[in-house]
Length: 143
Image (cartoon, helix red, strand yellow):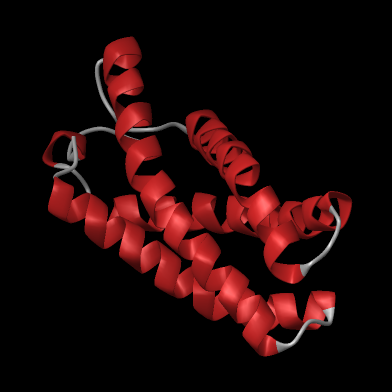
């Protein structure tokens, strides 16, 4: 299992890189001013960091219980990313609608676009992170 320090490094790195990518993309895609998209991105990143920490601990404990380890196969990584984004979507939807003064439907479309971006980004980031910072028990395993 990862340490608390490692989980914090993982979450902070994920959100900082994600913010640098999603803010200009969101501004272009939705035609909103930088300060509005930037604020939503920062609020979303803050909530997502908390959710990342909680979700990953729970997912790792579940994997440990079901498989005896925490190393993920590609299907497990995909499930990890999809379930993470679905949980975050439920949290962020009302925040986006309220902050931007848009309907829940418009917020859902916007949030779905962000979720799609972050789902792919999470898959790539987590795989790269696991390669850069492997756990000792993974040294002789594949995946």
